[in-house]
Length: 484
Image (cartoon, rainbow, N blue to C red):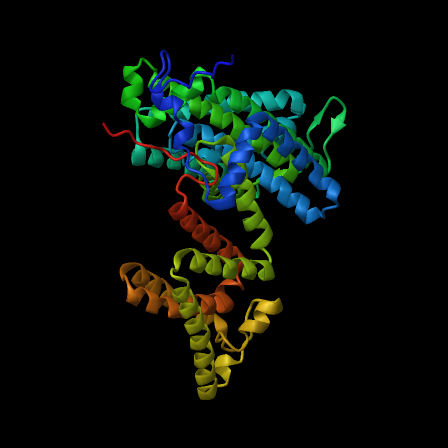
């Protein structure tokens, strides 16, 4: 006679925390087939997923990619490594470090001074090999992280952000103006030698790409072990509630200093590879725009997640360095974002159809009326190329001198978007039609012709949409508050 197995006991078990045990039940997954894919990936396991991604990353150069694509891959790996390091400070310890990019600069400049044989413009004959200089740079970065963290260990929120931001700006000022004889000033330090160890010299972009793959995978593996250690749990406890962590005998200040030191070491290691691959370092390489790019990768992927930080870097850099540098691809992305937003937000479907039809009719009528009044007002061509430009030629107004009109249109678009957020109901639907058209007008007359500006605006728009749709990021875990 067979005996049926006993059902699992309900309620909390002896020696187990019920809130922790039921964490999987509180996970928020992506909708539809995306959520099913996310669950399937979780069943594979973290370490097998890391191995698969490492093999896929190492196989990319074998696909016959050009020099530009390999450089984008190098930039992506560097931002991914920086985002993984920033995740220690921001994602785990909850420290808003706005001077993080200065540790990247420290690594680059320290490597340059130790290996180039020059102290600024003065030759000193110091040519340390990479096997010695890299550990020295990382130890120096850890000490610098402790020095930065020491005066700010008791600060929280805005005060901490201001102190660390001052450190980042002070580093750029120091390398540019305070010590130009040592750091080379605005001209930086050029002519650096490659990374050499054990008779191997890295002289090509492919070799640096493979090095970054190895370093990134190794850093993610080490940090995964650290995440599940007592130190990792202490970091997360401090992030959630410093007072409660201190009450549980966690040394809060010491834990924060450790986060600063570990994050600084990862950033400095990235700076070494960055300087060696670029064969130069300049103060402008480590300014605030690059810091924003690193934060964008971490936020988009999911703060607190190692895999999320790396995934966010891949998404951000493919969009930022790949798609948005090309006028055709950036146009595809711009109009795709508008279409996806309309499909996701407008319900019922007849409302979506009415808005699309009204937008098309509005553009055709406006183009015909303006063209009848002044031929020069529609004499220009859309900045988008390919089939998008052909479709928009008789729909969007592009004057013969589009720059001035685009500037005024940009100001009007900002005002219209503010009004669109304030109003509700039918008026929002009505204002949506001219807002879409004005957005296309500004894109074709101003933004598409200035990739440097457009990349920043588009990246910001993507982040705004993402943070509203999924605040925890692509792979981040939603934080749940306990109400008693």
